View 1 (spheres, helix red, strand yellow):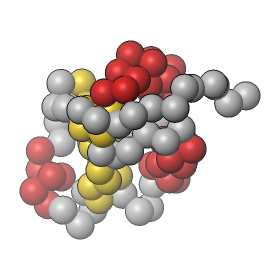
View 2 (cartoon, one colour; view 1 turned 90 degrees about the horizontal axis):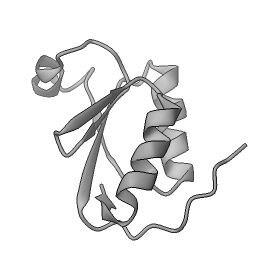
View 3 (cartoon, helix red, strand yellow; view 1 turned 90 degrees about the vertical axis):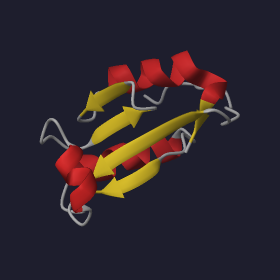
View 4 (cartoon, rainbow, N blue to C red; view 1 turned 60 degrees about the vertical axis):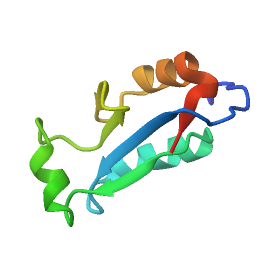
Length: 92
């Protein structure tokens, strides 16, 4: 069941999605964010050594919210909370 989310005006928050092309969960999460119209900047850590070296945990995908919060894996509960909490303040 798809949750109902009001249309968002993405203006202030920056979301980075750290992924790898060989990660099926990364693709699923990207699809979920896209379907809920949550913009994000994708960083492929398999080809970006600088970003890969910054990883504290070697788990993908990772959703970094303005450098304050990191969600590891496809934690739908936390991502849905993020969508509700930040509503109109999200941008990619």
